[in-house]
Length: 204
Image 1 (tube, rainbow, N blue to C red):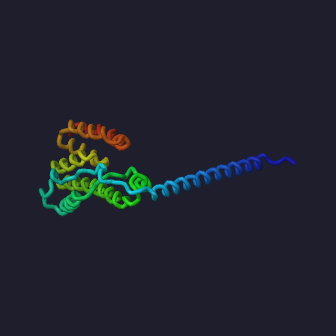
Image 2 (image 1 turned 120 degrees about the vertical axis):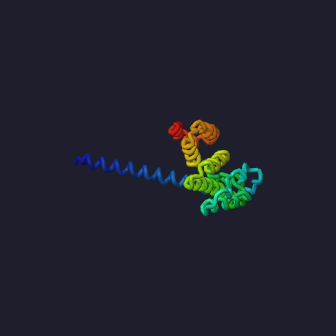
Image 3 (image 1 turned 90 degrees about the vertical axis):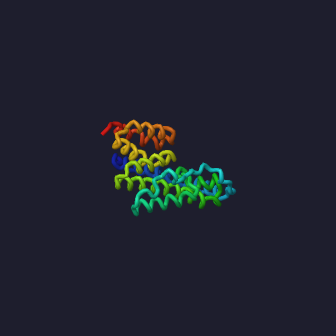
């Protein structure tokens, strides 16, 4: 008796699916084992000195703190002033396992706190500048954003908003400063922002 072709095809398809599923399961199991082994090694890493890490040097000295009476500005300024006493570093490119392997699990809580300070700094500076723009304090907003740029913060809106304000001030030539700053930053970040700058080069 001849077996129908569609039945043969179904059997082959089912067998192929089973093989693929088995390989996928094995790959996942291997990945899980590798992760657990890496975690084990990370948790066994001895505590290392983190005092010499490239912490961000942050100050409010050049910011327009206290120049304008506004509750939202005051809130941003308070956060920023509190951050001046804190250690700040961007560690977002590392996982917790990476950090434990590099510096030991005993440092993880502190390092996570310093990284949180970095993200609080970036979001607060951007919110601070945006509020100044809303209040039509363009020069103050530019001062804030230029300072944020000098810190090489990796938030695209900092650079795009600054370019927009340069355009509004009829000084699009200053956008070259933004381009120069981005060129020395991480390429994965700068490559996302640089293509968006040419639109701001015209005088309004």
